[in-house]
Amino acid sequence: MKPRILVVGATGNIGRAVVQRLAGQGIAVRALVRTPQKAASLAHSNVEIVHGDLSQPETLRAALDGIKRAFVLVNAPGRHLELQGNFLEAAKQTGLEYAVNVSMHGAAPDSPIAFARAHWQLDDQLAHSGISFTHLQPNLFMQNFFSHIATIASSGVFYLPLGEAYVSWVDARDVGVVAAGLLANGGSEGETLTITGPHSLTPSQSALALSEGLGRVVRHVDVSLEATRSSLLKAGLPPTYADDLVELYRLFASGYGNVVTDVVQRVGSVAPRTLGGFGMEFAERFQPKEVTQ
Image (cartoon, rainbow, N blue to C red; front, side):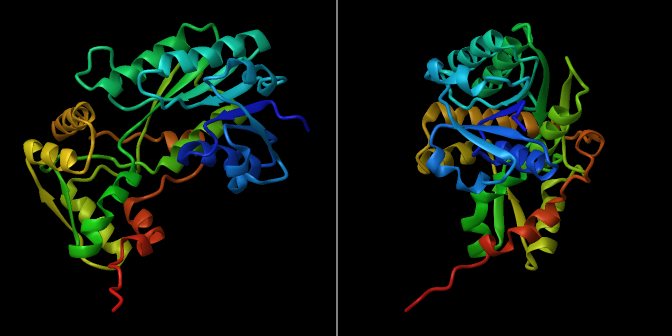
């Protein structure tokens, strides 16, 4: 069967989950990748891998041939509107009817966070393209805890400037499950869906959930926004990006992430992953490294 669904960004955490979910349900899907040789993890009898690059518009029309629905994730600061614009132009020429894009919880035109404004711009561009759409706005990802592997492994601690604010951490793969549900079954056209995990947790509760999953004690240590910025700069992040992350933490420390929805269950038809389950699945990555003599 010729695919009628295209996944842009198929090798990322979310895009890969979209492809795997659709293919596993027996639905033919076309995966757009810049380097097909690096897409071995997508191999499946229901998956057609094609080369395409959003910065090379001439590669997009063939990839969109026969496609009616698409998943779009653009992650290119400074070029985001250009690249998504290239895709939308080719999509309109080839008859794309519906697109699902990934935004973020907190996307807004007046946000102090540059990448939140960028996500809103992408949402707005798609909404005015003439193509039917659904925006997905996930809460903070569980995968963000991977950036704390070093301190959790060495001392059982992660540092976040959130006070005791609640956040409903969501697994990025569940965003892919929701997108796959929309692409396969339709519904929610013209809507913005906030995607969350099953529970809203304080950092202390998050530490307890991770402790249960990892099988060892994990603690949260609250830190100031100023100390966080210094750590980000020390880690080599550009000052502008460090400032954006500080503003993101400031927003979520105010309680912005304290929201729980049923979107994963209702649209994706699966129970959302828990933080404890996430910890259990990736426990080996958080374990102390043995020192060899």
